[in-house]
Length: 281
Ligand SMILES: NC(=O)c1ccc[n+]([C@@H]2O[C@H](COP(=O)([O-])OP(=O)(O)OC[C@H]3O[C@@H](n4cnc5c(N)ncnc54)[C@H](OP(=O)(O)O)[C@@H]3O)[C@@H](O)[C@H]2O)c1
Image (tube, rainbow, N blue to C red):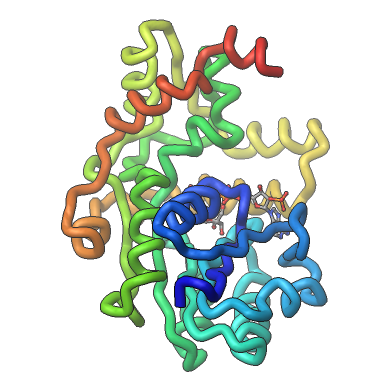
């Protein structure tokens, strides 16, 4: 099986990239795809799917923009059908906690008859360093419409380790792992820990969700993305996801990475160093 490629949908993504690196280091042949690869894969254009899938035997699937969007369930249903017809035998789906739309999309895979795993995750630590939140950390103030709800942020390296285990070890087949970090933290606490480790002031400011969305609107952010962010910061961040779950320990037999460890390895990358970022721009 090592010579038949493993498909990775989300080549440049926070977890897709890590899953790809790990599989290659273990000697597996991979086919990492996204809109910018050849062959390309675009969730919004199902004509691209079959040629990306053909010849692969299992897949790590990250959906864009988010499984919470209303169209995700139908798209995943269609994707699983196309994948099975193209010969795919096993799908590992990255999902989100507490999102009704995501849970409906999970069901579309679970009930499809194809071999499956669900990797259902809390918010990623790497949103602070590899996504839109990095700008706030660099600027010294992170402004978001999240109240002081607790969230057990999970590390993308742990997610990738679980995804790889489910892809290469059949003992995990047809299991759902709910992954969180070992501590639930508020945004204020996360930013305080980052600020302390960086040795410079960074603060968190919570604002009303309507103000946040109005600003995004003024900046020309597309309406469906505005909808998604409102959904994430109101529904998903209403406290429903504050409990810590043992999914990483269950899947890997080791504890989840702590937020402080994430901070230390991220400082090592230089991504929160404004001077270094200016030089590499
Ligand atoms: N971030 C979190 O905290 C979190 C938590 C739980 C679950 N999730 C789930 O994780 C998944 C990934 O979310 P993410 O925000 O972390 O993104 P991500 O994995 O970092 O992925 C970003 C990449 O997706 C590719 N992409 C964008 N639109 C695409 C499209 N239409 N078709 C194919 N590829 C596309 C882009 O590459 P190209 O430009 O090359 O196409 C981009 O580099 C989502 O389903 C989300 O629900 C995220």
